[in-house]
Every structure is written in structure tokens, then in C-alpha cells.
Image (cartoon, rainbow, N blue to C red; front, side, top):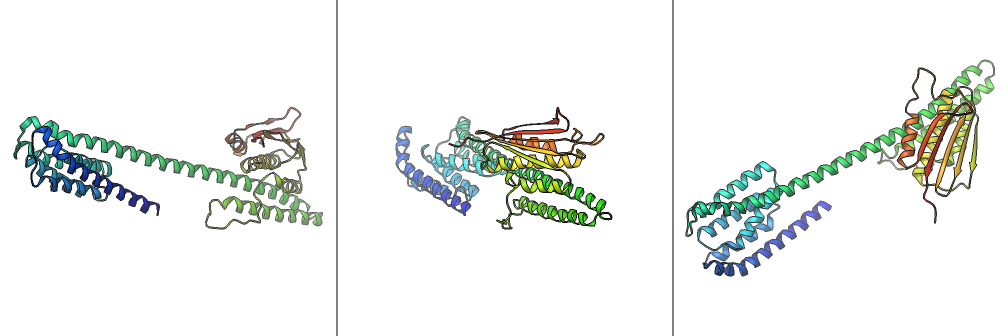
Length: 375
């Protein structure tokens, strides 16, 4: 609909241009002839009107428009009528072909128009000879150069829009991939630890093994629900499940329970008055806690963890420490994308992020996220 509206608007504008040039030609040709000491004839105004009215469809049929205007203008000049407003119609027709057609066909069409226009230099009532070549050629070269420049600028802007759309799409895919990594990584790590506990207790204490299997079922369901919410942005044809909560700090109790079921006791300490945070900040803070605790589960060995949240007027800070080995990964293994993903999340929002061995042992993750102060 927008494209049709744009095409309709272009048609109206072109019709107005044609009408203005008709009026200008009817009232401006005679004064131009007086200034040049030349008169008009019976065919003067019909040719001026034909050349001007042809511009009403210049963007729909630019080549046909150029052919009609060139024929009318050439006949006008060959008959010896004065240089006047009709040349403006010719200028606009050449410009339109250069601006709305590819370079090669536009150059060929304008070259043919120039060759036809130059007929009046050598034949007709007023023959100018070689001295008339440069002025006549200027009426093609100048509008062709202007139109080509406009077309190249328009194509460059279109390419920039496409590149920007591709960049935004890539950024969205990267964001979704990071979300999936966090959700799946945390869920599988917790399930793996709970499964190890269940296998260990199955023969000796089956009642405790049953509790571990129940925790596996709950953790997998929660992970699938969170993954479904995350992938909703990709599968836009599916309605969002309003019952599924968006990931945020409000889900820390469930996260703590999952970790406790996997054998990692987690303590949550809050400093300041909790308040609603912007969605992006809330999600980033939660993902930092989730990924830090997942690393504790994977790499810290037998350990406990402490999550500290501090709410300040202009920021919220997240600190996760553990009592484990003090390294993000065992020797010989890389730390993966977890720390890099956390850092990217935080810095993208204008915050700061640090991670490394704690001075008291274990590992420490610390992030500061800016929040606009409420007024």
C-alpha cells in the first residue's frame, strides 16, 4: 500500500511539473524569441505543449518520454524557432532517464537523443555549424551527469539500508544464540549434576534418588519453558505464552532451588530496596547470575555460592562468589563462551564487568549495570 501511495504521489508530482512547463512554455516562448530577434510560427506552441505534457509519464516510461520530447524539441529547433522553455522539458527528460535507468541503457538513449538534437546545428532554417555543437551537447551532458549522480546516491542509500538491515538481523541472531547458550548450558549442567547424584544414590538410597530424578524433571521443564520464551522472537508466527514469565531477577528463587537440587547451595543477599528494572537490564543481570552459577556447577567442584545484589539509584550491581577451586575451568580446558557472553551483555548496556579468582579463594564475578534514576 505504501508503494502504491508513493507511485500515485510521483504521478501527481510529474503531472504538476508537466502543467507548470506547459504554462511556462506558452507564456515564455514569445519573450525568449523577442530577446533573440526571432519569431514564432504555427507549430511553435503545439510542439512546446507536446514536449511538456510528455513529462507527465516521465518516471513510468522514461525512454518513451525522452523519445517524444527529443522529437518535438528537434523539430522545434530545425524549424528555426527560438531557444526557449522547450529546452527545459528536454533537460528534464534526459535527467529522468539518467536518474531512473541503469547506466548503460541510459547512456545509449541519451547519446541517441543528442545525435538527433544536433540535427538542427547542421540542417534547418538556422544552421550553426560546428560552433553550435558545444551549446547543444551541454543540454544532454549536464542533465545526464546530474541524473547519474542522483541515481548513484539513491542506490548507495539503498545498499546502506540493506547492510543495516543485515547487521540488525545478525545482531538479533547473535542475541538469540547467546540466550539459547545460557538457557541450554545452565539447564544441561544442572540436569547432568542431578543425574550423577541420582545414579550414585540409586542402589543405596533409592528414596533420595527419586528426589534427584524429580529435580531433573522440574529443571528440564523450566529450561524448556524458558527456551520457548527465548525462541518466540524467532518464530514470530506463534503467539507468546503470556503465562511464561520473562527471564529476570524475579526468577532467582527458582534458580537457587535448581542449584540446590544439583548439590550447590546458593545464598542470595540483597542490599537496597528491590525495584522494577528495565527489561534489558533485568535480563542481563539474571543471565550474569545464571551463567556464573552454571560455571560454579561445572568447574568449581564441591562448593557453595553467594549472590549479592545491590540496588542503587543509578545502577544495580551483581556479584557472584563461590568457595570452589578458584578457576573458571580445569587446567587444559577453556572457559568457553560464558564469561565472554556475560561481558558482552553488560558492556552493551554501558556497564562494567570483571571476573577472576577471588582474594579469599574461589571465583568472583562482578557486574555493574547503569539504570536511569527515577524522577
